[in-house]
Amino acid sequence: MRSYFTSLESPVGRIVLVSNDTHLKSLSFSNEQVDEPEELPEILLQTVHQLNEYFAGTRFQFDLELDADGSDFQKMVWQELLKVPYGSTKSYREIALKTGSVLNTRAVGTANGKNPISIIVPCHRIIGSDGKMVGYAGGLERKKWLLLHESQHTKRLELF
Image (cartoon, rainbow, N blue to C red; front, side, top):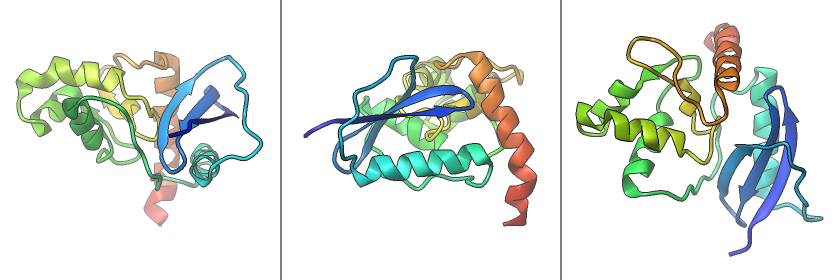
């Protein structure tokens, strides 16, 4: 199946999106320009639109077809990340318990770090058990920005 690429500028830097014809495959941060095809599939157009709404503070949940490559365990962790509400955080330990055992905490951290669709699969909402911000493949400054952004718009969410 063919892959498509596009990028957009955001408050947390340039975001590069990759999809096939129907599903978003990855979202990453990059300083590189990408060669974009003349026509983009609908999934990339929807993703750009929904990300722009998210950064404007008017979208609190994404509604996109996702297809991230990973192991069964990683996919199970990413499914749990999707359940963490906008403006909230969960600890690695809490996610580990949801995936079967507190002994999974390190494996959850590893799966979280390998999440290929950050922001949309909200790995930035996962923090240490002590409440500290730890680890984010996109960098801790981006993680802080995303969490602050969501906390500032949580009041708006309560109105809907």
